[in-house]
Length: 150
Image (cartoon, rainbow, N blue to C red; front, side, top):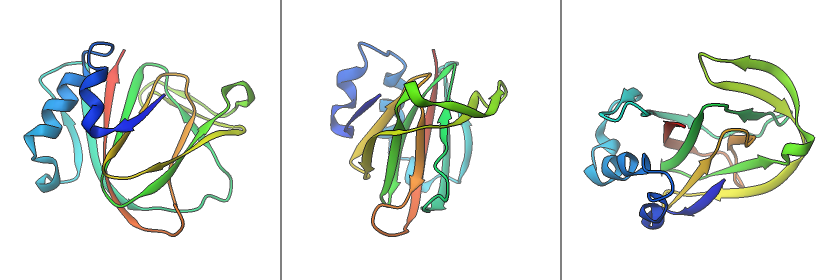
């Protein structure tokens, strides 16, 4: 996992070249005016989802885990908490769904990250993460999640 300022995203392109597509889309400036939905890019290994929601406090924290794709999560507005799992404690609760590249598990919390529109979170396959969580109080969020096939 990587957490950093969006202004530093280009530093990671040499390690994960598909981040250039992410950088280009962000610099294009169109995201704030686009309709919510799923989008493909010219790069066959990169797609993204643009959506909105109200952050919530879960009754039971569940972690999402991907096997094939890297998540690059960026808030366009609002703020939230993301919780990262201690992978050694994860116990699967929902079997892996290949069409969604996701399984779900319970486990212990390792790190809490406070996301804002000036930051990004990058989750690699196998890294359990729980997002969309309140950070002090519930708020409306607009988020883009890039999916990079690795």
